[in-house]
Every structure is written in C-alpha cells, then in structure tokens.
Image 1 (cartoon, rainbow, N blue to C red):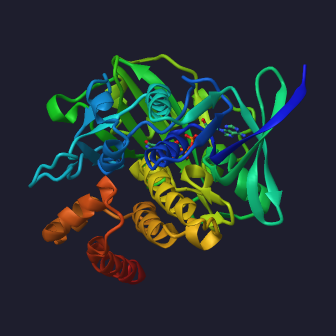
Image 2: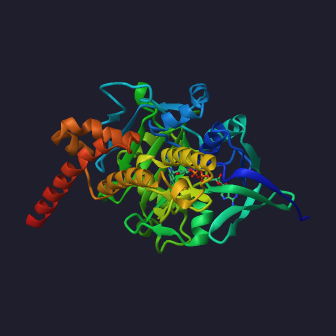
Length: 419
Ligand code: FAD
C-alpha cells in the first residue's frame, strides 16, 4: 500500500542513524532544538568500523555515553601495534604511554551494538528517532534545502519540512551524490575483504585489545586484527582494488583471502586454533570527500561528507567530531536566524585540516614509512606521532612530525636513486 499524509515541521532533519547522525542529533537536542532523525534500517544492523581511537572519548563524554561504554562488554584497547611484512612486531604505540590520561583507553566495538547504544542515547536526549524509515529525497527551494520526503515500511510517504537538513547517510552520501560534489582520491583506490574468527590468538593484559596492523609480504597490503568480545576477532585485508580483485571476477573470496593470509607471516600463527564464524564481506572503500561541508540549509557529517582509508581507524572519530562541531554551528545559526552556507559550514576548514593530517600519515604508510625507524631516529617525536594515532588531529603541534617525515622521504629517494 502507499499513501501520503500531511507534512511535519521541525527544526532539523537528520538523515541516517549511524554514529555521525546520532551524535549530531543528540548535540542539537542538548542545545534545545527539535530534531527528527530518519534511519532506513531497524537496529541492530551490521556495520563495519569496529576499532575506536582515544579522541572519540571527548565526544562520547559530551553525549553522556561514557557510563554506557564503561558498563559494556566491549574490549578495552590501549594501543595500536604494527607488524612488518617479515612478521616482526615493531614499536607498540600505547596511548599517552608516559602520561596516562582519562582517554588513554578506548574500545573495540561490535558496531551493531555500539550504534544501537548511540541511537537509543539520542532518543533519551529528546531526538525523535524513526527506524525503518527511508529518506527518498531532499526537498529544495532553489539551492536551499527545506526538508525531506520519507517513506515508512508501510509505504506511507510524507514530507518533513525543516530549517536545516543534516546528511549523515554514510557512504550513500545523498546530498553529494545528488549535487555531484564527490571528489574521489586517486591515491587511495583501496578495497577490503574481511571476516570474523573465533578463538584466534589473543595477547594478554593490556595487549589483549590492541589493534594490530600487519603488513603482507611485498608490502602490497595489510591486515587489520581487531579483538572483539566473546572471543571473536575481526580480521580483514586492505590493498589496492586492482591488486585484490581486478580480473578475478567470479573468484571465490575465500581463495583471495587465504592467498593473502599465506602472505602474512604476522597473522598465520594467530589463526592456528581459530575457526571462521562469519561469511566474507567486501568493501570497495575508495577514499573521497565532498568539495563543501555545507550549503544553504544543509550540512554533511561523517561518511556523507568524506571517507578516509581505514588504516588508522579514524572513521568513527571523524563521524563523531564532524557531528558535534556541525551541531554547534547549526545551533548557533538557528539561534541567530542564519542558516546560510557560511554559518553552517564554519567548522569546515579546521576539520579538513585535521583530516588532511590523518591522510598524510595514511599515504606515508603506503609509501613505505617505517614507524620503527622514525621513532628510533626522532625519539622525542614519538609523543606527537602517537597524538596523530589517537586522533588528536586538530592542533598545530602535531605538524612537528611533518618536516622530519619529509626528510626521511628525501633520504630514501636519494638512496633509491644511488642504488
Ligand atoms: P554510517 O555508519 O554508514 O551510518 C549511516 C546510516 O545512514 C546507516 O545506518 C544507513 O542505514 C543510513 N542511511 C543511508 N541512507 C539512508 C536513507 N536514504 N534514509 C535513511 N537512512 C539512510 N572506522 C573506525 O572508526 N574504525 C575502524 O576500524 C574502521 N574500519 C573500517 C574498515 C572498512 C573496510 C571500512 C569501509 C570502514 C571502516 N571504518 C572504520 C569507517 C567507518 O565504518 C565509518 O567511517 C563510520 O561508520 C561512519 O559513520 P557514519 O555515521 O557517517 O555512517
């Protein structure tokens, strides 16, 4: 059946109930605004993106999520550890090793459960959350967004009019797809293939929940190794799309996965007693970004704005961060009667600077950057490198590592030229 009914009016419509949408809507409700959030799925639903980084802490605190996180069964994460293509563990990065801090521990989350907690939390803060309701399109008056058209599971279509529309639709990126604002990043055309294992090897103590980034022989790709609760580990390979999948149509993903495992000396021994307990999943997660963070009456948060290669597990942090700073700008705009692009996009330049810092670190790794060698050469910069890895991206101090990185790169180029 299908039908239409009378339009609803609200301050802000949020499209999507993932971490970005839940954050943005909760902060808007905290500021006292009326928010309607539409999520096409019913939660809990599967999602990738399980490893949090410490800087998520500050946003989780603001959202009153800390008690829920501390009371959960999510595995505690204290470090990220890199394993070379030869299977050697290099320098572990414990977060704030010298000066432990309230945010020095973070979590490995099962996203179906984490996202549910976040969405329920939004509702507890007064957001009207609707699950199983799909946004069909954004409504425009000229270049101004004025609301959305939604359809529920019974096929009822209605219009929801608002002063601001927040696109938090993840990689569907409703607004940038519609306006043609997506810019792909040609340096990072990667793909991922992953599954879940029971009883894989777990380190002990504070290393139990460490994320391991394990390079494969020939340095063509890397595995993530993310220990979750209930003795499950999420293990996935990331490499160039062309290398992993091109001209292999119809090939069993298991064969591709096993081939990569056989190339990863760091991983093989960890799987000796493990049993695969889930199907294989694939993401073609080309890195992209919108040319704008906002327009008249609209703003983009999380993956709906941009997506950066998952090497350092920055996705949820960027979703939380953009969700909260966009909410502040939107609230200020609503209070001053200014919902222009300039007002709603105020947070853009700082946010993009932070994202660029993370991207630089991603590209360095793919170009052969060695954390071990860097830290040996510049021990005093280990702290700033760790700051980047925890997601402390929005302060200029971390740029201290850039110049020495450039030098190392130049030295390596000179050596290669000589050889
Ligand atoms: P999403 O979580 O995708 O939420 C968007 C929501 O919008 C969805 O629930 C969707 O159902 C809903 N939606 C979409 N269209 C509509 C519509 N038309 N109407 C209504 N609802 C709609 N990040 C990390 O932090 N750590 C990691 O370890 C990590 N690993 C990753 C590994 C891979 C292979 C990939 C691809 C990503 C990884 N990420 C990781 C990134 C992370 O998954 C995302 O950055 C994060 O989920 C973004 O959150 P979001 O709220 O913007 O989008």
